[in-house]
Length: 386
Image (tube, rainbow, N blue to C red):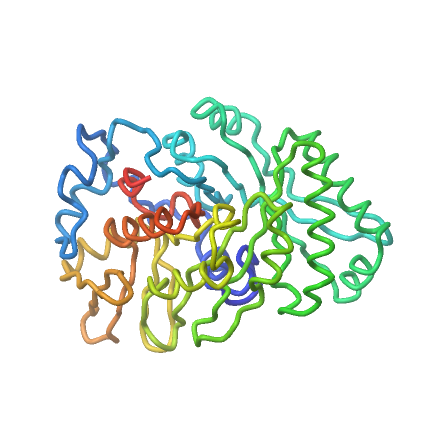
């Protein structure tokens, strides 16, 4: 992802999504337009997973999801939830059986001084919501995102070079998990050092995960793509993967944000997504621990910039401009263009039933799991495919 305004996916537009979208803008929510309804058949059985969907069919069907809410994808599914997207809180309650883990983006880990750590953001923890999510799926795991936030370079050097610091950090996380009723954590720290100090980071993550696992807590690690959009090796590769795979429960792989604002294009070209997995795990030994990242947001390109676009705005654009959707065979994504009067041309890439279906099929073929950034950004009928 792109920079660290919001580092869930440290250097990417996903962050951009988190950093730029309004947290409370009801007029942009498509939920207000019409009521969600159940369908007797899935989107596959209704013939909606196609290369050339009409805008009318999307607008008509996007709130109609299959009444049989059961998981069909065999691998693990992790879904992110953010405090600024209210519908994201609804999705795990609606589609809980489809998910194995939920990752609320709540927490920050701060270093206050030598061997002194503080987990902040606990005010966002909503026990009532957690209870409702667990009611929808008794086996679901609650693994909040923990962002290493506000750390200076010296903070990293002090902790990475000290067994006592690392041990205290792990103990603090266990205490918080047990006090709050969490099932573990999703750690986001790898990209903050820009690919440096990999050996030291491996050692620290190993120690943290071993400490968590000893208390039957899950340890998930957010990792950047193994291959950059220009074909260069990424900040996390096969060597780090193989060292950490025995102790990490899941690697949340950010296989999206491929294109930038300067050049309209797909978010996750299929060949690149495949390559990112195979570069980490050319054989099957640990591949099941990779959580292939699927973006549920899109991008609206105009001029030299790109704006994140969520389901509500996407539906508004379809209704207003009635565009013809095109299928990009190479990237396996849909896109369309539109203009407002004599203004600059816009090009929109947004997930579709077919693009998501193909990526879920790829995950099944490769034997990986899936991570969804983020719940509530997409259209409700997408979940039929899981």
